[in-house]
Image (cartoon, rainbow, N blue to C red; front, top):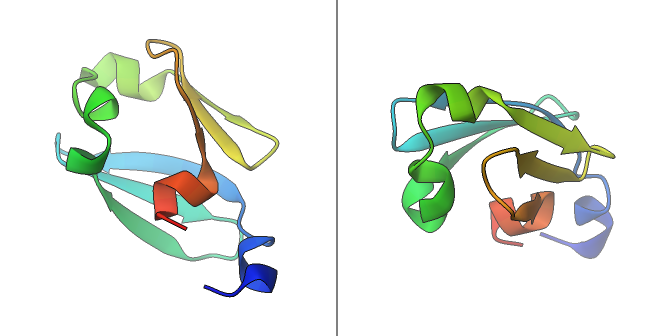
Length: 78
């Protein structure tokens, strides 16, 4: 991705498919499939813990059960 494109990346929402996949909904209407083997601490969350998240400034993702804050660029591997 070019730098001007990455500046526009913003998180709108997330949801999960089973325990292996997370869908990252971006504000530009794209949906990115994130394999959770890349983020084992998210993968180990139970169903309730997966619903307890916060999107910060449309750029960061935080789960209440994890001390980690994820940048949208990190989630996309940019």
